[in-house]
Length: 451
Image (cartoon, rainbow, N blue to C red):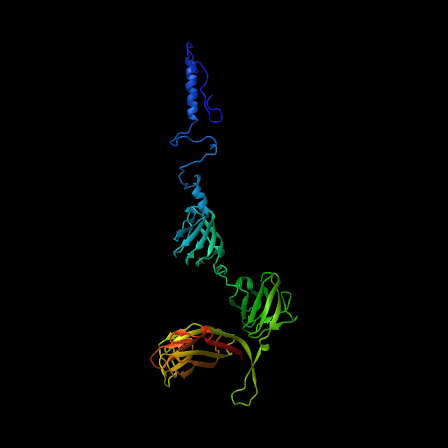
């Protein structure tokens, strides 16, 4: 009868079972008994693994113990393998960083080696945290957001899933909160220049993400290629024209001729249809200038196009001297403590550069010199100087220069300080230590006035 369906086995009843005195056992019954025992043994599991299961194995509320850890598809998992999926494990970065081979879904990627692939063990998804700076190289087998390489930073995180032949990063979060860069696109806060054309200006291709643009040139624009819902800040660097029509709806109902420094907003009310809102003419931004010292002429008004300020609140020290003689200070003299990059909107504008600081010297009676330099030009544009009456006595310094911009490219202004004798100069403090918690600071301001 073999087994009874519950795993139990009983010998078949015949002339051999049960054995009875005086009853002859037949050959046929003996063979039947042996056959039944053989069938029962065939249904048993051999300990050396030869027997394949032909049905579900009921454990009767008992455990499988001594189980080896599964390592491939179709293997059983040990208890600790299952619950280690919630434990983060360190994995060193490598050209091929095999995230799928790890017995956890949460990985801390260490090291700085550039990663070109996540391996071919496609067990996913995987949740990744990066411990430092490395490069994830976009490819068909490591698909990155925006089809561009990613430079990681400490505590950036990502989710990767298996795809055909590789892995895809479906989510990436920078620890800074900034968006992931996309190939060929500019961050939203970055101003980019777009040339005016006699016709349609393509904002979809030339400014797909940024919302701050500057239109150069002096041609008449009749339309913008732009997606519905976009709002952009626009600054004019030349006298381009906005042609009022069905594609560009001006707030005056007429063409607008822009001048350098004018600004306005574009709002796309439909695909490739914009309205001009908030137009501000630079000529309306008038800043009165004071009368010249001792003069009797009329006050002059000029258009303030922009202003920019850079500051330094930390203490700074240096030992390079600026000679106290009748030579113009050179860019190799003194020590550089602060720079500012300034891009004029009009080459004919007037730039007013003002610099100020408080400094001290380790030697009494030394002259301290503050000098303004432009780019890599050797001669200083302007200086101010004062003599320290005693050791570590703080003196105020203020330098001023006025010039024609001469360009619409970026200009770098540099502040350098030094004593006219040996010793240590301290900026924003004395004896190498800061004073007044950073409120007394080194500052440079550049104002641009349109012609």
